[in-house]
Structures are given as structure tokens and as C-alpha cells.
Length: 427
Image 1 (spheres, rainbow, N blue to C red):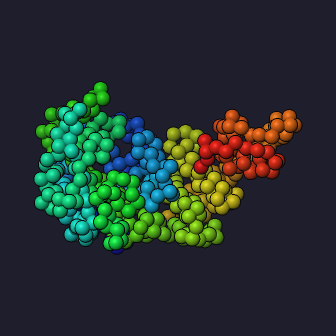
Image 2: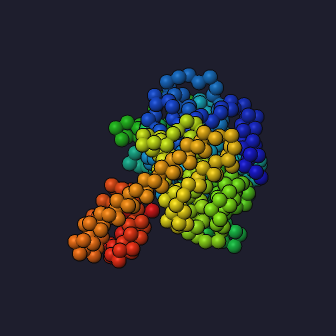
């Protein structure tokens, strides 16, 4: 099932359930009234004023597919991207919300019907998790969710977790509540026996798909408190990652093998004359580039210009991270990211031009700084008859000139110098 069809099925399903379908907001958080986030990081962002009781909703049942970026704050996935098979800096979140209309019971039934009847995911591969309660915060076991799930799924596939996994806190907004998560086991049949023991264990093939949250508490002075407004209504927030759903429905072991990423990876292979799936280290680089270029494009499409401020700094960081990985592992020292942009939109010549210039500027800066550091090493180390580049110097070269350890190591080798083995500034 192609990703466009997967999105269409989701929206049509909730449209038939009388939900108002909203368009995806700009990926940049332009409404700082309720949140100081730079980027939209979840589907609930555009509906916060209703959950916070600041505005009366026109529609009580809502659904949408929202582009989200998670590079900063609690949900920062940057350092995982490329090293596992399903994390991304940008993803599309499929979500539905009840603003006082339906309960957790209905939300769970919707989710179950959609994934088992419409998407036809096998019940045997599904595990659900429920909030087990927390004595310290005087929070009760989520009996409501359990009573629903035990009628839908084998009890052996129901697991119980505490605050960390099944009590969702929405950053910056002090909204929270017990959540029920749906996890899918995508491993082959031979290894299904211990599936329930791999839920929430960072296993690449037993992954969280859908989170259904009953928002009914607020956080005040680090305490979880009941909220009369939320408790007297049914406020539900759900989210499911499109990329993960595609991986499951397309029977792939990685989101990078789905039809969202394969066209991007193919063009990267052609541009860089490399092959995906042949070498683990090269695969990591390809995954990082394919993830980052997608985030870079959609951010620039929404108006972000790479620079040293706020959103621009984050996008510049992704551009440079892509280039530095390519430099380190593929020895590529010239711009190429701009050549990938046509896969998204051939007409966006302004983005192509801006990106190309950003890449050129970075390589010029890198060349200049390598030259400065080489001269520094000659003057301060070689001419002083020293033989070692220590941690202090390595950190200085990184913080002052942006040179990573692998570059300094190359310089040290050229001048027959010893270098402290450190992972302090390694990529």
C-alpha cells in the first residue's frame, strides 16, 4: 500500500466518523501565544487553545495529518537518526482529537477498527500498553482503557507501564493524562515468541505506532493535579507516525525502505555514486542525508532561511551535519544536497539556489579553518618540538573553528603527531 493511499484511508475514515479535517499547519511554530517551540512537534499544537480552555471550539471532532519536526527539547531524535530503522527529524503525524465529544473508549475503538479492518494489521502482531497508576502522584490504574482492550485483544498482549511510558505530558503546556499505546511486532514468525517482552525496550522491530491520550490533568508546581474543566469533558489527543505505519503496511524492516524514502535514496545513490544496502557505515550516511534533506526542504518551503538564529540555525545544523558525514565517510568535499531537491519539487529554484550557496559557504569556511589550524599546529606544536595534540586543543579547534575530531586526526597524521583518542566531539 503506497503512502498516499495510507494517508487517504486515514482521512476518509475519520471524515466518515464526522470529524472535521484540518490541513497541516506550517512546520514553523508561528503562534507563540501558547508555545515557545520553534517548530511544530505534534498534531495537537494547532488545537492547544481548546485544550487550555482559551477558546470555544467550532468543531468537537477533529482529524489531520501534521508535518512535525523533533530536533530540540525533550523529544530530540537527532542523534538516533540514521543509526536505527525508524527515527526521523521530521515526520508526518496522523491524529484525531475529541474536544469534549467522545471518550477514551471511542478513541480506542476507532484506532482498533482502523488498524485491523482498514489497514488489516494482524491482531496477533499487536500489543497494547496501559497506565498502571502511580501511588506517589495519587494516580489510579487506567481501568477504563483496560476494560475496553480486554474485549478487543488477547489479555497476553496487554502490558502495563508507569509514568515514563503511559502518562503523556505535553511539553510547555502543562497538560497531561494517562495514555494507551499500540505497538506492532514486525519481526518474522520464527522470532515471535518473546514479542511482549520487547515492548518499550528500544527494539527496532517491536515499535510504538499509535498513542491515545486522555487529557484530564494539569501540572502545577511539579505536581499533577486534577482539572475540573478537562475532567468534566472528554478531551482526547492521539498521534500515529506515517513513516512507521508505512513500514508496517509495506512489510519493510525500516522506514527508509518505504516509498517515502526510496526515491530520495535512489537520487542520493546516483549523485554520490554509492549503493545503499551494501555497507553499514555508508547506509548510515545515506539515511542521515535522506532524513535531513527532507526536513531541510519542507522547512525552507515554509520560509526558513539557513542562518545563525533560531529555526535558521537548526536547519543550517542539519545541512552541515549531512555534509560533514559525507566528508568523513565518503570523502565528499563539494556541494551536492541542492541536487536532491528536484525529487520534492522541480520548480523550487529559489530553494535550490539558497541551499547550493549555503553548502558552498560551509566548504569555504571549512577550508579556511583547516588552513588556520594547520598553521596553528606548525607554530605552537611542531616549532615547540611538541608531539601531542591533547584534549584541550581538540576542544579548542572544535569550539573555535568547528573542526571535528576526524579532521584534526587527519592533520595530526600529516605532521606525524600523536593525538589523544577521544569521542568528545566525534560525530
